[in-house]
Image (cartoon, each protein chain N blue to C red):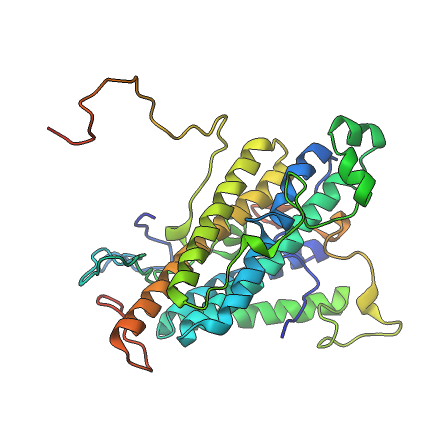
Amino acid sequence: MYINNPENIDTSASPCIPQETVLRDVQLAASYVPFQFFCGVMPPLESLSKGTAFYELYSPYQKREFSNLESEKEPCQGRGNQCDE
Amino acid sequence: MWVYEKKLEYPIKIKNSNPKLAKVIITQYGGPDGELAASIRYLSQRFSMVTPQARAILNDIGTEELAHLEMIGSIVKQLIQNATIDEIKAAGMEAFYADHDKAIYPQSASGVPFSAAALQSKGDPIADLTEDMAAEQKARATYEWLINLSDDPDVIDPLKFLREREVVHFQRFGEGMRIVQDFLESKKMYPVQLPDQYR
Amino acid sequence: MNRNQLLAQLTALDFMAVDLQLFLDSHPCDSEAISRYNDIVSKANILRSEYENICGPLTSYRSTSNCPWQWIDDPWPWQGSFNFKLTRDGGV
């Protein structure tokens, strides 16, 4: 989810990137989730409280009053496409 | 086989009755995107997986979902155990009470009993893993709606834990998919070639 | 540690082991992760023995028991009184 430096990793060398960032030789009609790499874990009570031992997989959720995820558009507005000019 | 350890994966300690909330949270017990559906799906699909990693992932996530099933059952039970008849009526929970008293019964939020129609075990590992990734997203979204409906931290904290587990499971199924895809492409039996940049 | 603090630490360590174990299923060659996993399991097992000595068996066919048969004792994990409140510093 994001690049982080857990306490127990020596960062005087290069930082540990906890995932693949480039995928090569990908095929059509196949799905690809990047591999995670091991860069250390959180302390036990923090892991339990957050629901994972890995900083990079932690995805905090804030309660939402409404769950409207769509963008509203007036009819007949816009140029009929989503592209940049 | 399964070993039962006499403790929950995450503690559930709810002080206040809330049958209204219980009525919706039960969907993660017996509903189509709930923990029972997830565990049966994964524990059934595991027999058809084609690499050791995928067999392990299906086996172990299926097992963890049973622990989550237990948590949801505990949440619903603690929410209704001390509710009065008036509270049950005010919550619109009379129908459930008439059929089940304060028991835990696997059904969805709208009262549909648990059904295997919610899941598939296709035998094709790519189809199965794709379904598993979808299942984790559906469960994650359901937990978000349930969190939106709750205002009790004793309930929200375990729901947030369970939601985070879905995020992690999605990542694992995704990695399983990569491994199986590569295996089926490469036609090598063992060991499996992992993609570039795996260190 | 009191019983709740002990249970909180054990729950947390076992949980880390589960999360790490799922990672290892798809990363079987990651020796650093395996080493961390083994470390956590060793620590958890020490706490598990301590917990079982104070509070009784955690499993019904792997843990020893006094007489009368402790396994059936209340509270069971789905009951509120079994559980601790998770705080920053542990179990309360």
